Amino acid sequence: MDKIKDTRSFMRITHRYLGYFLAGIMAVYAISGVMLVYRDTDFLKKEKKYDKMIEKNLDEKALGKELKIKNLEVQKTEGTILKFKQGTYDQATGQAKYAKKELPFLLDKMTKLHKSQSKDTLSPLNTFSGFHYSFL
Picture 1 (cartoon, helix red, strand yellow):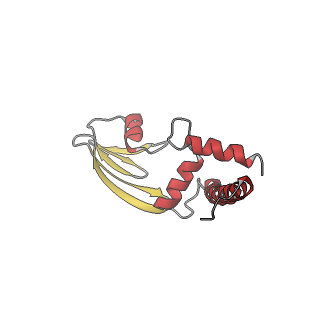
Picture 2 (cartoon, one colour; picture 1 turned 90 degrees about the horizontal axis):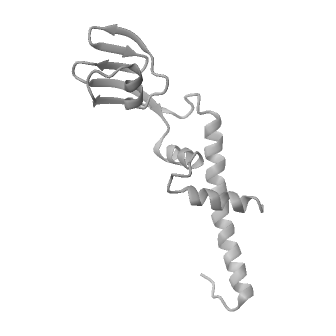
Picture 3 (tube, rainbow, N blue to C red; picture 1 turned 30 degrees about the vertical axis):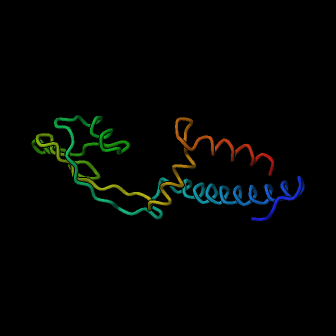
């Protein structure tokens, strides 16, 4: 790192590294913003299969909440087995077998950063970045 000799050199060094930081954050937001445009499609998503044991005798709404599947709709019921678009759930045993399409790890984290809320740990970073973007 450069030596800080006086106020001018301090300001130049600070401005340089703050600029690098903001450029990096802007790149993350740009990439995740483009990804959010296509969130309703399967663009870059991979299918992951799950086999979970959850509570028994859940209804349709509770099952969707437990499996974190939006708009879960039971298509057919065969005995104690509920069949839905993504998989099956056995009400007697609590076994759920289903598949979800998810973004790769890094892209998923970037998208969650872009959509963060005030309760998230990174919300001060979002506020700081947004405030500094107003000066660009």
